[in-house]
Image (cartoon, rainbow, N blue to C red; front, top):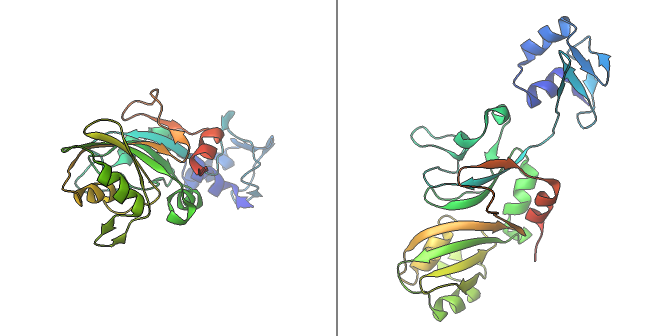
Length: 234
């Protein structure tokens, strides 16, 4: 059970001070009844809230899918660079959102932004084995040696990577599937073979693929089915 002023402030743009004023003006109704005190407690997951007759949607957590474009850093704030949160629509600005995992500034593709720390941990932890698949373009041809070494585990200066799947899709292009998220991992893995990654685009998390309907820079709320696919492991 939570105080109603806390519930509303966490799910709307209203401050607690404004909510207190609205309650004094008899403008707040919960489950069809007028709220008379800001400290009144309700079940956050089972409330129907109206303010000035307008239905307020109460969601414990928000899950947003972003097709990340180049030029944005995966952080909640940065003093000198644009972050992925700068792409968030105004109606979500009041939530304590963060990117679930990181994509480099010049890397594009599927990203989850949420305020659910437990969910984020479950898809990011290497122990959960949730796959992330990337399209890669190199400056040199992709080789069978790379495929074998990726499968065996490439040694980086911070340890050996878990086995990764490398599928050749063209002379200079491939799809790479990993279950880790080390700093610049894919770029460093290819660097062990003298290759430079020219383009990197994440197309899948779990069993959820980046669809063509989500254009670069666009965001949408994830459905329950999409969230389930994100957590699935092969």
